[in-house]
Image 1 (spheres, rainbow, N blue to C red):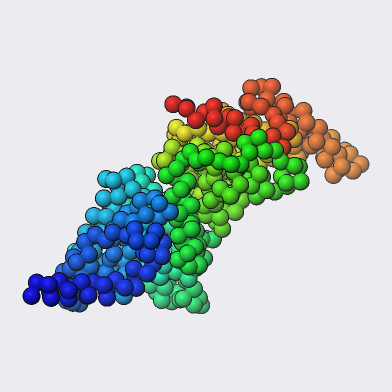
Image 2: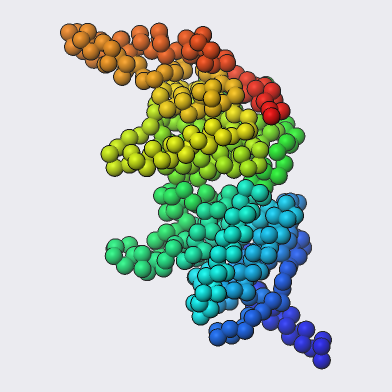
Length: 456
């Protein structure tokens, strides 16, 4: 009799989790998943489901042990209630206790409304557990189908929020959100849209295989901060290979190690992780004027770097900040948060000026208060304002009297920049540690990083 009862329970559990187990096994190493709380079940007005619509347990991803949970959209639409909230919270807390990376896969239409306040309490316990995990262990949430209601807030307390291309993440039903617009509800708050328009979604993937690749690379960088590297630390770059910020990033860091973060968002700044002579680092590469959104993007990266003792490399070409009457208040808030975070970082911080470091571009990313070591290319320009603005302020009368005002302004701007903004002039004042040829960027940064890795 007991065997018959167990066999029936096992069959019901396997049937309930068949679909969600496909994604779990596709992103984990073969035969590595060990399930927890497999038979947990409560009877509700909607019936009962063994496992409570959540699969949880431990596994390996590329030989890295992780804790994992996944909601099952086939069971009560993946809804969150009292029992499965306890199950999710338990695996999150186990991850923290064991020091394991946490992987969550969400596909949920919202709360089990029939449970009333019990469901709300369940959400609160999950958010509390995620808050305890964030910054303690690497945390990754992936949204495969939908993530509606209060669980959408979970995405912002993780290191990575990965969305499938057509997944939807919203605080309410897209039908409600699109009601006053002409938008197609199916296209509201998709992963692709959110990756471009907000600071929450870090990556968009097309399938389970791509999800595993993203998660695996991130975990390798964060859990193995020092790896053997075959890339030549003395490798130099040709001038032709340093024409764009993407080229510069590629030439400086170890080949094949780049892991961009939020690449489609606030594109005037690029952030991510990479290896530099085998050492995991975070990089911030500015390319023009910084927006408030860009500052928020940087802050997110810096927080992760501080949490997991990852050095920060600033690659700087920044002419200050984007300003407008409509966004200035928000920009002040975001930039201030970024500056505060830079000031509080205890990890090694290095800066390379490959273009301009003007105004905020210097203060935030190069100033001695914010970095341990700074170098600049020979043609870099550093100062309060750029040469053109300085010429207009200082030589207004001379320009006005010139026969060719544009030509006069250009010449005066060049003269001012050469005398006041050039990297050698700034270095003479003690504000730069070195001025180098562009081709030597990688070996110089490696040497500096090795020096400051033991920083206390």
